[in-house]
Length: 276
Image (cartoon, rainbow, N blue to C red; front, top):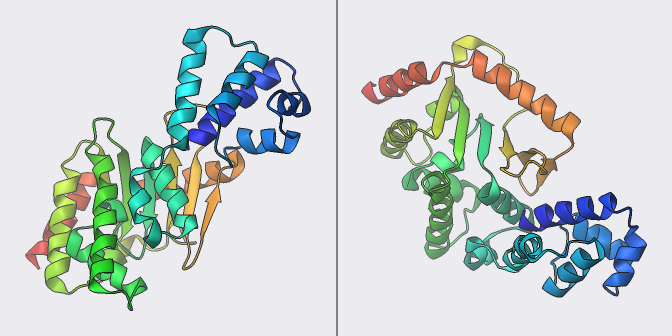
């Protein structure tokens, strides 16, 4: 995400000066294709290249240059999840990077409790379903990774999470009744946090707007970055960032939020499950 942000800024500066990709590439001894990849955040940046491009684009004030050069340095640093790289397929590593950079996530789930809201025992049961041959040590590390992701909800720049959960999610009990009880208690505890909203979509509401299945919408603090819609599949994921596509999913999420139980009503629903 940092590469995308820096690339977006460099593209804006280049187009404002009316400089072609060919001329920009020549200034850093590269092709126009590399400039395109840099501006899309598809490749890493050399600090020297960023400095040369800024000079070409007329950004000579040290106070203006410093943040962008620092951003290049940060973009090349490995993420905190680097030590779990052997567990992560490339398509999901992308998502963890997006999640770490997001300021808000709205998600609809119809199969499992969202990963950011899973208790350890529930998370382990869900992970075992997709990794039935994994050794206990590997399962432990996968649970640790999921728990580590949840720290985004408690950092100083807290992630705002708004989850709509289908009732079917709460009726399934991966890991057994005790794990599910712990999970519901964890959900109740999380809904007490000011940056977490949970709504339940009960069966009695009938059909709803998200007939296609689970999805998440990630929003970022940088205005230059578009919303990203994420849909996970068994062995891959789909990322949508075109405005026309993401706006459709935002409208669907808005309708789901209206159809579902209100947050206070959802808390009462969760408490009633515990009583049973």
